[in-house]
Length: 516
Image (tube, rainbow, N blue to C red; front, top):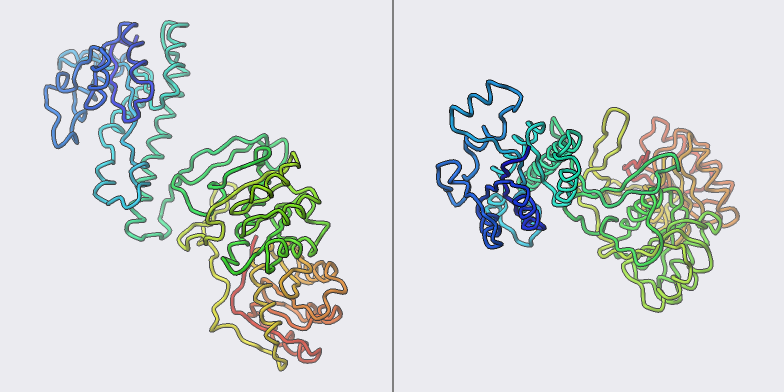
């Protein structure tokens, strides 16, 4: 039975009402600091923590509940006669319920200009200790860390005369999830203060749920979307949905791919990315965002259908009219004019998202992670494209400035194409993309076949080196005039010689971009 409850909360949502309900049920309330004052102001009879411990709160409140009279009252096993005899001899009473939520560390470090000292002062010590003691002894102590559980506990108590074992165990588990989240947030903050982003011997990560989804990649798979606790500007969790259904698992994955590629172009002119199944199917630049969209659309009018479109400029009415001509899953941009929004919203099922700082690069310190069965792969985020000093022309034929610009444009795109990846571009638009093939010549065939007659005078970009000269031979048949690739094969010279033979310029960047 619950006879005594210890209440100490930073988030006081619903706490007065909950304490009043406890008092109605004959529960004695112990409390500390600000919570004690709030309950007392509401007319609730409260016992101060010092009256229980016989020791004053001290060190500016740093030491209040860290006392044997508190933790013995929490940790004594009710079914253990020796425990109960010991606390009786010590004059310690059991504590049957703990209602605690912790100092607002997250809110503190989110404040602009917060100092390290202020952050440290908002690291709770006594709270987690009480929570862990209570949770460890969950069979004898009901422990509440979330105000949303108050009503559940009261209702169950009224219906059964107690709080059931299953509920106690669930609440105990919730506590350890909460304290793990809290401690992880602190460790991540401390590492950031030290500029330490090394790979530790143990990696502890924490995320907050944004939404549960109808299903995952396929209807038989359950799924949810989580975000990092501290906002990362320009990333998908910061987007605001203006119109349409909730995003699906595949929507989020594909849109993230579109944003990754869009960031390659920064604020370098109006750019539109079209993505299908996490691969770019059309990329266009232009003098206006409408021209950029048309270029992206014309790159592959078939694949863009049902795809994702990301733009780095405000969507205006003219662009919205073009967008509305086909079915798209998502359009994401920094903003939409009222006229554009009205036009796009005529289509019921399209999702419309805005994202401030859409062109902002992902921090170089960010982790790129891939879950594998039984483990986790972690690497630095791929924030580099190539080093100017490493870019070199390796053929007799020198590329023109236009070809060189197109090749660098192509490298930005092919970096985000699943390997093996090939991209054919001309001017400010893609002509063909060959993604995710088990051999490079297969990827080249797809990209060049898609480009067709338009490949004449275009350039070809590859995410990794050519193991053979067959890609060069195929490119020449389609009229490609310049090729860019990382180089690094033991047979690089074969490709160079074939380019010289066929009159094609070739550039090595020295930087491979596998994407698996």
